[in-house]
Length: 299
Image 1 (tube, rainbow, N blue to C red):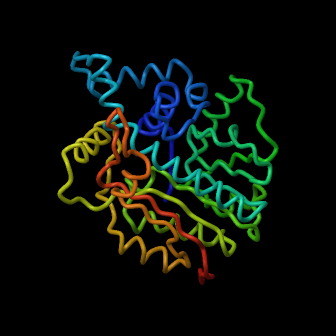
Image 2: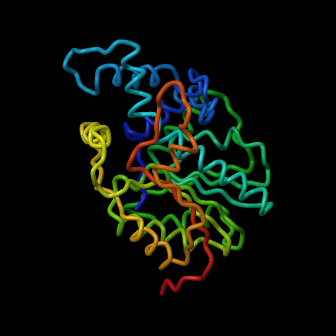
Image 3: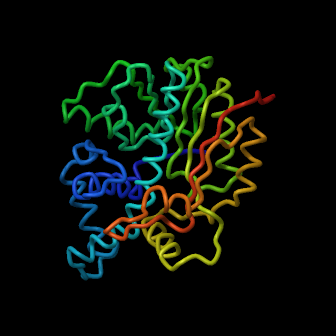
């Protein structure tokens, strides 16, 4: 089940978007509001944590070494998955006119304030504590919340996403684009499939779900295991990943058909080839988009 509280790894992903948008000459994705949403204090806290190697042993890396850590470990996954997602969303909106966009575990996502298409009705889902924190940030920034944006707080230990969305004005008959980014790493496939089942229940035919997931452990380079150790030190333990065939079966059983599959090799070619900063795709992370093509019996 998706239960995205304000986590350190979520803040690191927000930092990566802000860092890349402010500093990179060759942009994979430009989240020009990410820094404002974070604020200087949090941004500096994340940079300081990275520069200390995620420990308090007194060692501080140089600026060049810190930037290398960001490019090697922190930035590649969040940048490629958000670029993939928002391009797929843009194509979906152009093809279908008035749609809904549900961001599961929205965190510091800024799409609601970058979006210029009034035909996209946006629903940001998050844990009440995280959403309260974000709304306070928005108030401090004096940003006006667009009329087509809905903040839906869900305590997943007590409430169901389906019911809370419907209470917030979600239209079951309208085609919807769902994103679940950065969540699958910390869940077993059975638990992640519970969230996919709720999405299927909410989906009109032709709706789409997009997510990223780690491939089951194999003969991967050292940085894959190093990233797992980093997140574990931050209190968030990765669960070992999924096999493509079991992901495909889980989606198919719920009425979804994969329309776009990007294994690590394709992610590298699409988003990282020819870069001068040597940033490259993670060797164990895949991106998937799946369309809802048939009804599912939930009884």
